[in-house]
Image (cartoon, rainbow, N blue to C red; front, side, top):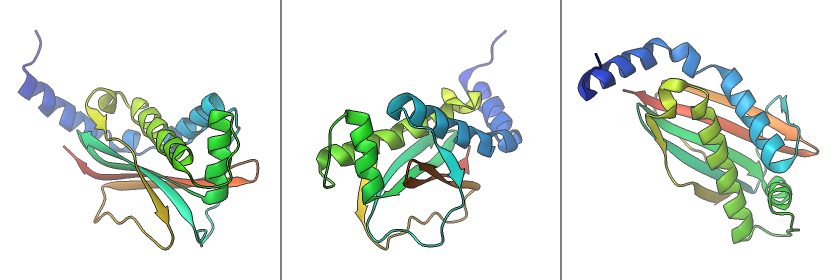
Length: 172
C-alpha cells in the first residue's frame, strides 16, 4: 500500500539526508560536464587544477535548485571561453558578449544543472530548476552562508577553461 504525500516527503527527506555522500559525490559533476560538452558542443573536457586567480572579465550562469535540495549550479568562464562555447553551440562566430553568447552560457548552465540533478534519483523528480541568471563583470563572488556541501571543479576543452560549482545550502 502506498504512503500519503506527507509520508512520502518524510521518507524522501530522510533518504536524501542519509544519502548525502551519494548526492555530493563529485563523480556526478564530472560525468555531467563530460556528457553536456560532448553531446552539445562536440568537445572533450578534462578536469584541471583550478588556478588561484580568475580572469578580469567573466561571465557566469547561475541556475537555482528548489525542492528537497536548495542551492545553485554556477558555471563561470572567461569572455574568450564564452565566445568559444557559443560558437560551438550555435555554429556561428562571435567577437563580443552579445545576447546570443549570454543565452548560450545560460543554457549551458541549465543543461549542467539538469544533468547533475538527474544523476541522483531522489533529486530527479523532487528538485526543480530556476531560469538561468547570467552575470558579466569582474571581481564578483557568489557567497552562500554555511552550505551543506560545495563541489567546485575546473575543466578545459581545447584552450578554454571554465569552472562549475554545485552549492547546496539546504536539504529538506
